[in-house]
Length: 245
Image 1 (cartoon, one colour):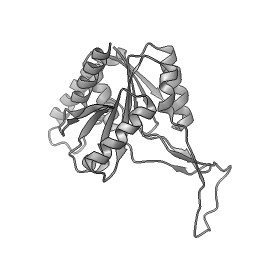
Image 2: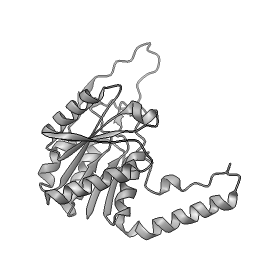
Image 3: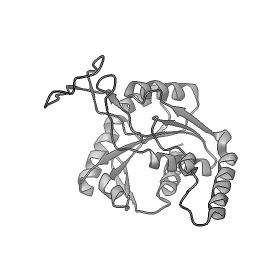
Image 4: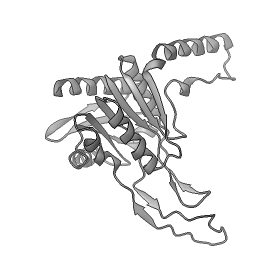
């Protein structure tokens, strides 16, 4: 199976030195890619410059480790896992991390490769400032930025790859589950997605990350917290993609 996973948060330049970003780290996307690779898939991992990357996110020697031999063994095991899958992992870094970069690279991969499943977990800017050449002065007490709506890249995926199994993501904060699911179902319809994965930022921050798999007209499925959440998500999505055929 060929899979695309997107991760990290896009940026929107204000001037030559400032930009608007979000708090997405790309960690969950990296976990999704690792789970896909563990199931034998080939993965094109499209990521922003600052995003955490599959396997590499663990590839640091802990200088505070009391048992340095155990830490060295952990890294050796990690390298072994990576070497077993590296031929199926295709990292696609966005040059700057803008929405335009994202649209261009996603379109290119979808048109060039025969992709079966797409996990669009990247946090994409909804608004972008009108960029200013040079650097805004820092003497003013108030800075007003005029933002224009950014294009919804997910809405073009069906045009680029009509048969792909499309998984969108909807993140809210401090929303109750019924409202979260309602908005995810609406997003599913307008984005022409097969499934929208709905989650709330507070459950992530409180280390009880929970996701709801939303399909229009079908009762949502809830996957509860756990270290294997990404693995359970991938397993369920692959099963749904196989059922659709």
